[in-house]
Image (cartoon, rainbow, N blue to C red):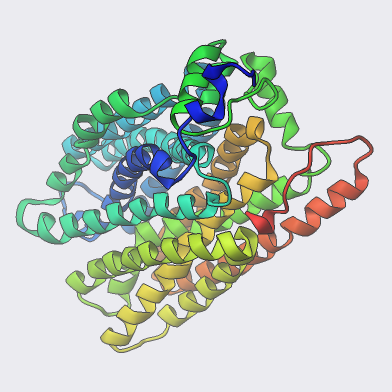
Length: 452
């Protein structure tokens, strides 16, 4: 920072919620369409299974769900590194365009194989979008409000899930399941123009690409500290390798795999439930409309959960909140395995939604205080990317159980995933203390994950 008038604090906007709002709003819109796309498949799956022309079976449906999340795995692993070369805004636009294209392919599919290819293409875009939006919001978020901003962002995912369920209930029975997928093409015409016009580029990425003046202009406009060479992600292939290697420096070498395991469990729950909840509840004896409605109810609970978890984590720590939420999710999954009256089941589903989705999001929030600014994109990319293996396993596992008539065991699998996720995230602070104790060279101080 210089002493010139141009760089004086008075020339900068205050770093408040108001300054971050444009970034949060645009990322919220992008993640809304992400949530809509992910939940569309689960919302219309009962109708697709009843469509003889498509030739879809429960086993094939589970496999296709895994194709989607396998595409997301590739997209997430790629985006966290490629974004620092090409920029976060262009990659975000490419992600939205890609999953819109995948939805169009699904709507036109005449066979299960072509439909699966469409879901894979959509997955490539969906996988890249989430870590990009998270990295953007965390970079622009006011100090001590990272968890709250993350929670607010992720309410959009569940709003999108509720929109998908509404389409499944209102459009699919009357006009067929294909029209629901046509709705998934809308992001290319709504979100892409807005992102191109209004979303700023990351100051850190601009600085890494040699555009210092633009980086400082964006930082001043949004009330951010001006990025330094240390905070900027290094450019080039060597820089990307170095960024990944930095995730295993002494302070985080043990915390990193624990975050990966917690993310694996969280995403197994998120995508297993999003894909199979209506079909599992229908197998438990509930009617078709009620079974699909459960997906809307659990996403409504997810919105409430994000608001609660974000504020609670800013006070008590993202690690602590995530661990408790995972345990409560496990309890809810076991309750859903029981045969309960319809009204009670709706309540249990809603409450389980409060814990289930925000448990995973608080894993993301914890990474903000485990990794340095220059490591954030790579760290989030790998936490979400490696975690996507859980998103692959979840739909496949429940599909395999459903193929053999054992859908109810899916709830047991979800409960076990919740307990394992709780153990993994709860051990992160201990892992960082152990890493610090073993460090032999000085390193910049990193806040405890429990203070995220």
